[in-house]
Image (cartoon, rainbow, N blue to C red; front, side, top):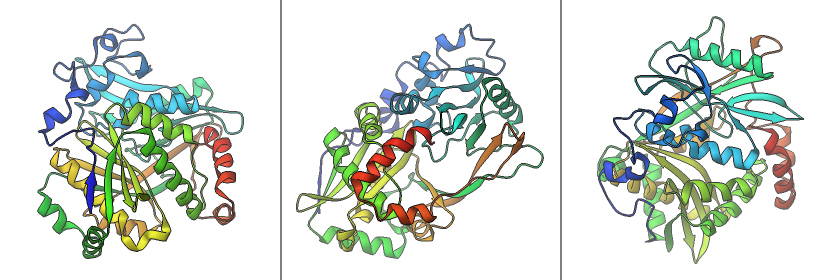
Length: 386
């Protein structure tokens, strides 16, 4: 087993050095002056803002507990430049610091109508609130939805307290605590995962950390084949090219690739910001599954991030019916929680149930289609989905 390439972290450093680029220009974690003195409204009250208009937004997010890349302008720009979604962020500030923040993207489609989503193509986006009962924030967002003519408001994660509210759909969420030694992290892995890592190390696998577009393209080819195997069209290549350009090239993530005889056999995409790491995508060549390359990719990423002082690795959402994926994530030493999605229908004036599309008749159809056809379907469908 060989490891090639440096992560954008460059070398082992303490956490302050790791996050230097995220924190540059911050004074006491305060909101940027452009926002604090903004003429949109008195920020002691809830207002709607576009974070892309405020150059210091990301500096503030880096100092928020639980702030992740999904709260930043980086991710907002990926969504806007890929799909044309409009940022409509609900925000309140007091004393120059966030009191409440609910990131929302307005999705406009002739097929699915106008709607607000917090946030599209994001497994979980927990809002900020100094209150344990942020009902006012959600009610303000609902009022904005009525004014703007939304059909729905969907929130992915958080605590939407309202009489009679039930989640539209639920997922498992998993988080690995990185604030441990390498030895401790390895001991927390399930026995099957440890055996898989040892087997992968005995193979002639080369592990590569990269921020290059070429690495993202390698990942994308694996991604397309993996999505076909799961019966799901892949997202457009533009989405991943924008991630490479706006996220990875700016030092906020990398692609980890396992190569066997120079061929990419497994790869994962990670984001990092502040103290938080997000495992966003994973893909592999099923013909090489016996090498257990996925196990090694995840372990090398865990080691790298832990050594560089990050606090948590969020493993994204897992369908309640995907028991195998759930076991794998738990086997990485992760803690488990439920992620609640809420969906409000403005026409019915009520909360409605959603769908977990992990399984269904369409997945069986998509598994039979060639990758080029699935890419065309994905390119047509994803601008209208979220």
